[in-house]
Amino acid sequence: MRDERPIVSQVDGRLEARWPGDRPGTGIASDFSTVAIGGRSALARMPLVRACGVTLAREGASLVDATAGLGYDSYVLSRAGFAVTAFERHPAVASVLADGLRRAGNPFVLREGDAIDALSALQPDVVYLDPMFPPKRRASALPPKEMQIVRALVGDDLDLERLFAVACAASPRVVVKRPAHADPLRAGGAEPSSSIEGKLARFDVYLTRR
Ligand SMILES: C[S@@+](CC[C@H](N)C(=O)[O-])C[C@H]1O[C@@H](n2cnc3c(N)ncnc32)[C@H](O)[C@@H]1O
Image 1: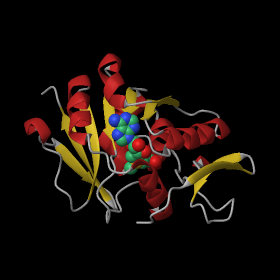
Image 2: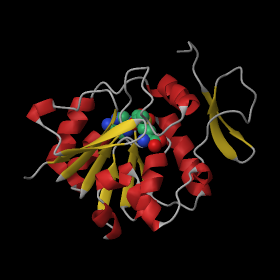
Image 3: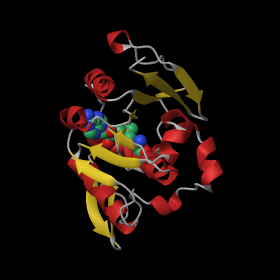
Image 4: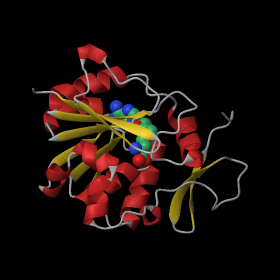
């Protein structure tokens, strides 16, 4: 873990975050043109989409991504058909994501702020959580450089249990991305109803109204 704080600046028409000593243009931006998605059936096979619900996606169900980061998972979920509202509470990360969204024609809605404060008023069909995990993990959608810079900006998500509890109260379906080797979240006695294995991560599905 590096001991310096990333800087955020506009370079060649896009907002990027980079380490202070690095050359402008080598930082991380939110760039959805780098996401290989394929067609409708390829999307429906993706573990992320299967965990959130292929039928729900096709029905245009509402989904809150409560941990947006640079928005890659939100982007995939919106392309699958979900009406996505994404929350990002760190101002620098939110501004990099807002810039990427603008360049991509706003495929989903971004709200800067804490999802904990907003979820109960929204009552979405699905809540998706991809919190920061302790270092060593490679489960996030973000590749390592992105992950390192986002981590240096936001630190750990220490209030994850609270976010999970609020999500379970607000929605009948909560999906949590975990590193393949990590235990599922069990706060408040919750148990996943099912789990879907991805290449680097596992998606635990909680059906909260059974
Ligand atoms: C691991 S990153 C998410 C990566 C994301 N899935 C992607 O595809 O780019 C986690 C992000 O969630 C944000 N976050 C964590 N808890 C939050 C909360 N309660 N409300 C809003 N944002 C939150 C953090 O600031 C961090 O940027």
